[in-house]
Each structure stands twice: as C-alpha cells, then as structure tokens.
Image (tube, rainbow, N blue to C red; front, side):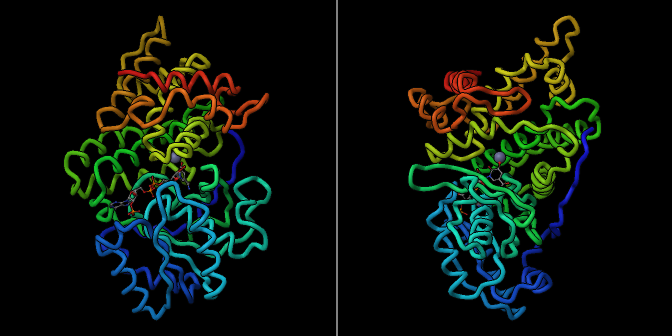
Length: 393
Ligand code: NZQ
Ligand code: ZN
C-alpha cells in the first residue's frame, strides 16, 4: 500500500426530511447570506426548493436564488453566479441538485474570490486555493460531488469539458435524503448507478500490489450496486434500496475505497470528450466507454480482471485460462448495464463513429500518453473509441 492522506471533512446529514435542517447547518458553518443554486426545475416541481427556502427563512438567513444549471454545467452560468455573489456580498453557496449543480456551485465559489478568470482553474493555468464555503442537498446518487473536492465544467465555446480539484471545494455539509431521489426518471437513476460503479472501477484497476482492504471495499460497493439498482428501477419508491445506493455513491467517490493505491481515470478522460461533444449524460457515456476500455486493457493484468469476474459477478475461475474469466466478467458488466437501460455503443448513446478523430484530438494526448493502469497513447484511445462505437451484447 502506498502512503496517503485521507481528508474528507464534509458532514453528511443522512435520512428522511433532513433537508428541513438546512438553515441550521448553514448557520453552524458560518453562512450569513446564501446563493441558492439549482437546476432545470425538478427541485421546484417536487417542492424541495420551497422546503429549503422555509428552512433558511426560519433560521433568519437571507438568500438569492439562481436556477437553470444544465446537465454538463456551463461556464456561462458560472460567470453569472460569480457576478451575483460579488454584487450581493454572498458568503455561502447551497447547491440543490446533482453533480451538475454542485460542480457549478463549486466553480462559482472558487471564481468569486479569484481575481482572474475562473476558467484558469479548469484549463490548468491556476490552482484553487480558496473558495466560498459550499454545501449541498443531493437529489441524484451519481457523481459523488457531494463528498469530493472536484468540479467539472463545460466551456460553451467549443463544448470543452474540463475538471479541477482542491480541498477548498469540499462541501462543508451534504444533505442526503434518499426520498429526494424517488422522482428520478429510470434512465437518470441508471446513469447515476453506472457513474457510481465507474468511480469504483477507476480505483479497482491498479498496479499497486497488496491492497486487500480497498479491493474488498470496492467489491462491496460494486455488489451493492448490482443488487440495489434493479430494485429501484423496478420500484422507484423503494426507500431502503434508494438509501443503499445513495450512500454507495458517496462512499464510491470520497476516495475511502481508493486510498493507498494507484488509480486509473482514463475511462473518465475518454468519456468527458463524449459528453462534452454530444451533451449526453455522463453515466450513459461511461456505459459505452468503460467496458470497451476493459476489453482493450485486460491483458495488461488478466488476473485482476478475473478477480473482478469471480468476486463481483460470481463467474467460475478458469485456472488454465484466466483471460477467459476476465472476458466473461467484462461481458457480465456490459450485460448488466444494458439490463438497466444503458446504451452499449455509440449509436445507442447518440455519438458518431466518424467523429472519433475529433474525440481523440480533443483529448489532447499528442505524442505523450494518459497515465493509468495501462498508459494510453492517442492510438490506444482511438482503438477504445472504435470498440465503443461498435460494441454489441
Ligand atoms: O436540472 P434538473 O431539473 O434538476 O434535472 C436533473 C438533470 O436533468 C435531473 N434530476 C436530478 N435530480 C432529480 C432529477 N430529476 C428528477 N428528480 C430528481 N430528484 O437529472 C438530470 C441529471 O442531473 P446531473 O446533475 O447532471 O447528474 P449527475 O449527478 O450525474 O452529474 C453529472 C455531472 O457531474 C460530473 C459529470 O461530468 C457531469 O457533468 N461529474 C462530477 C464529478 C465530481 N464533481 O466529483 C465526478 C464525476 O465523475 C463526474 O464527472
Ligand atoms: Zn463519473
């Protein structure tokens, strides 16, 4: 196991009706004037926003509302948020929604206290050192942004999707009420489940030896998702299954399952070009990319994939030919994604094979490589996109 620091200071406020305590927690964490940030309307329609506004009013905390965050959140709204925060002397941002709203809130939080262009953080020109405090009320179990220091924003000009990360962006508190996820369409639930599993796999496929504890934690989260996702697809109001998925989503991305080991993240790198270019859901893009990446790289360490196949998907180990077991496990993953309604190839996801050169170009690997479980050159990325374009069950 490698040396590590584990820093996860977010207070998770979990369970039924907990959003009604928002005002109390904002006060506790020093907020005196709030930007209430939300998405395209689901939080308004469900009455959630009203409940949060009541809670802030009861605590005597003034707020300014800024809705309209789109999935794959855009830089344009971030600029507006920064302007509002500066003009209105806002000192706390409360994000009500999924990864897109939370990431937009984090970008506003960092940009408000930065003299330059906030995009500097996403283009790699600057590092986030300080930000306004952010908190979240999560409405979809997926991105894990409620417990991470990461944020991913899309620059509308050129649809360039890029991320940044900093301890300063970790939410002060995150309200996780599984009931809030019951209004999700099945497709969004499945996209979220795919993202959660991907966050675990990005950590599971490692070259670090002797990491039994994190291997087993990863496998536990994956097996939970295999059990609970079909249950909520069949019965969206199933509280206990929703609760298990919600906590799995947070656990998957606070990094507790990934500490002390090299991680991969190349499926995410390849996917971000897909959701950037076509504006498709991140989870749907991952469903197409991740099994294809697995098929391309498994020979780098077939035994690790065979371990996934036997421990997570219950495949029989073929000791004479572990590669067969590895491939069987990957096929099980793809079948599972298909069974929950995810796309499996470019056409189903709304992407085009003829755009592969554009995707590779936007990845920006040049003559170098993307480091990971297996280092990927631009040629490797092209081959993975080709597998993804033509994948079948
Ligand atoms: O905008 P509204 O109306 O709320 O609709 C949203 C949106 O259309 C809807 N939705 C959310 N909660 C709902 C609901 N509809 C009904 N009932 C509810 N309770 O779901 C749609 C998707 O929401 P979004 O926030 O985009 O989903 P997700 O949480 O998957 O976030 C995706 C974004 O997070 C980034 C992705 O790249 C993508 O941009 N990621 C962020 C990460 C991070 N910050 O750590 C890591 C991830 O790997 C990921 O890259
Ligand atoms: Zn993700």
